Amino acid sequence: MNIVNIEAAAKVIPNKQQLINMVSKRVRQLSAGSRPMVEVSLAMGLGDVALAEIAAGKLIAEFYPIPGDETLAA
Image (tube, rainbow, N blue to C red; front, side, top):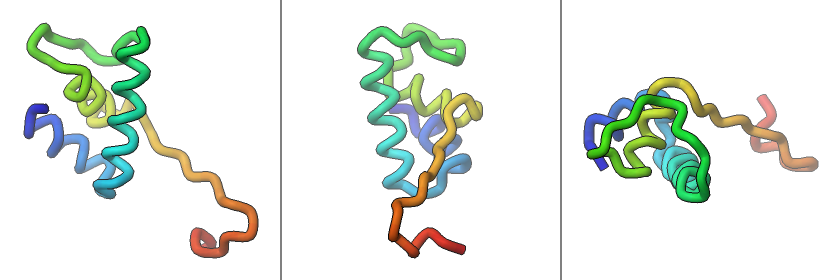
């Protein structure tokens, strides 16, 4: 994976674990046949495509509260 793509995606999703989970899920989707939401080149791997999509704001993370879990309550 390209360090530039990693740094750009980390600016959008600063939580490393969340970023890893998002990239992993998107790579599985891409390898299963989903189309990329950004322009890709032949040199880009699926991880780079996922990171580029996150950096471009094409993928977002949504959090849903777990019933009875007060840790996410503001």
